[in-house]
Image (cartoon, rainbow, N blue to C red):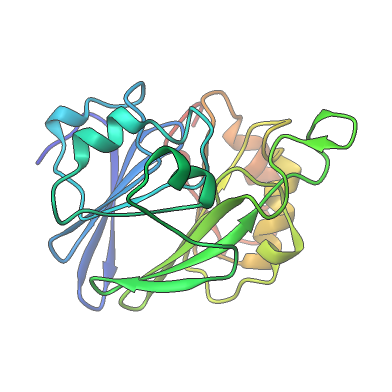
Length: 226
């Protein structure tokens, strides 16, 4: 399988974890014969040319994260769909996880992490992403822990996570984080690899400058300016 999109490969104890950056918040992981799609959206990729999903993860039900037609294009009888309660309302065969719940599917550990706004408000007192609604996910592939944060700011729950090898942190104000917020989160998480995502026009150099004193974090941009 070859894609025009950016691709990285990370070695785990059980083989390579391949990461495909499809666009915006849409990701695909392949590992040990499994295919995991995150927030598939038809506007971001031609899913007709991609492998069907063993697992689909949906962080929340906003249109740029949940596209029922994309999920249908990836679905086969054995596909397992994991999301939040609002996602289940739109795709009934979704297994809804609450913040803090953990499951394992075909050897992949999945932990739902709170994803919400603190300062990004739609109106006074109304955040774009309210607390207790959306999920981020910590995925465990053998010895590698991957955190896909969803739409969120640098929350206390995020900064309390431990042993994160790879972190996908969303950069887009006011819906998600600024470079300064991502840097604050990264200082707590200390991932080996940091992928800012959910962005098309972020300045990579600004974030790298904010983390210049932490050379142990490899900041990799796969969208927007390098």
